[in-house]
Length: 212
Image (cartoon, rainbow, N blue to C red; front, side, top):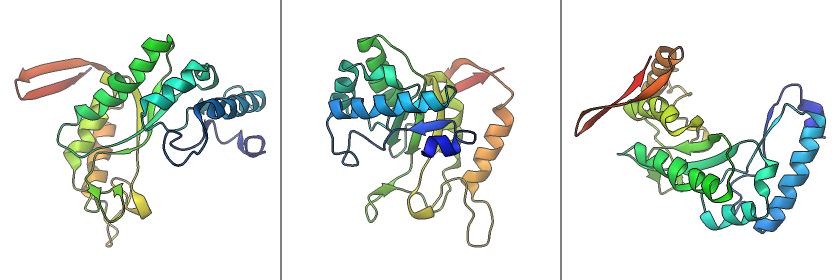
């Protein structure tokens, strides 16, 4: 009923949240049944809709069991969630792309676009058990992630912070954009009309992303 009502406005549907953690209490086999039912119904209503695998936290056992039951036939996008502290931004993508996604693609002989539908590179706040950066000052990290996405074939990276503490989109108490928001806006506006072509090693400690 939700798809029937909103299919003219919503084209992306993620089936469950973090199916390999405690948000989902079923088995991989049961998730395949759920995914298949949702996929078939959504496509029947809107063939142009995109169905997402349920926000994997990259637990290899769960994902492999899903694919063993041909779950890859019932989603269009492989959605992943990933949080990590700095310093090495590339480690995020190494795990998302090479450590998880490409392993599944190779082992089960299929391919799907990769989107991180929830993630952050900021330090964990033990009080909340979630990643947050209330100051929004890690501008360089946000720019690095935006610039590196094409290298790892990750189509999008959606930022998340708990309880309305946004790392890029919110403003401070004086209604001023936080530094990270400004950094993201500048990077995206500069690069949106350019195409990623590769990496350039400038020195043992410095690597540049090349766009043209």
